[in-house]
View 1 (cartoon, one colour):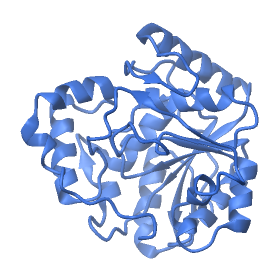
View 2 (cartoon, rainbow, N blue to C red; view 1 turned 120 degrees about the vertical axis):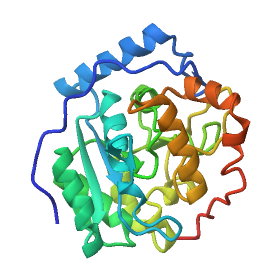
View 3 (cartoon, helix red, strand yellow; view 1 turned 60 degrees about the vertical axis):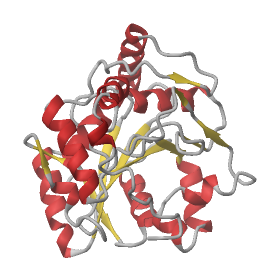
View 4 (tube, rainbow, N blue to C red; view 1 turned 180 degrees about the vertical axis):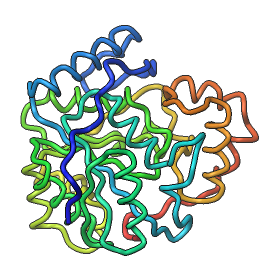
Length: 292
């Protein structure tokens, strides 16, 4: 089931500089260069130059540890709304769609999408890969950037950087910042070629259908995979939203910075001076890949 066809909100012509360097064959982005690059990519996305990239945000109300988290309010904007804004502000997406489930509880997600003016697609609760394939068929593109709606601190500049790496490497099937992790959980970005996503739909079973792209990066003999790393290593931070401890940290960040997307470098520098906040969720165990 697919929601009403709408154009995505206008992409921003710039993104705040994060000051991080990519070690995947890209130069460290200078602030002005990063903003100029994001503007150029926004123009290219609108003009149809290069591969057409669609963003797909997976979102549903069900959560074993924090039910309803995607619609929790942060400075007057839902968690989902923050993810949608950050992805759009990257300037690299030709389209954006939210992939939710057919569970009646997710009628609330659809209502929020309608309020935000964002297209939606509904599919099986546990077969998230099927949802992504359906969203891609409804919104055709050459590549898909996958986002999850529990990442309210997503950095638009990192989204733009990963899209740029993907465009710079011919024949790439999949790129992600999570293969060799240097980013905090909650800021990772991944992109997959549309044809590779279709291949996953044929090959993936079990938990790989829940995690969408995991079959690709665990089978590098079948797919051309690239890990994107950024310096300095900030993988010790946890900035995702999966538990009440995570919520307390995220809410403190938003209370301080307000309703804006915060560049990772600025956020990390601030957290360096907030040891009491950093330990709030330091003991949270990340679920294993095999856990749904």
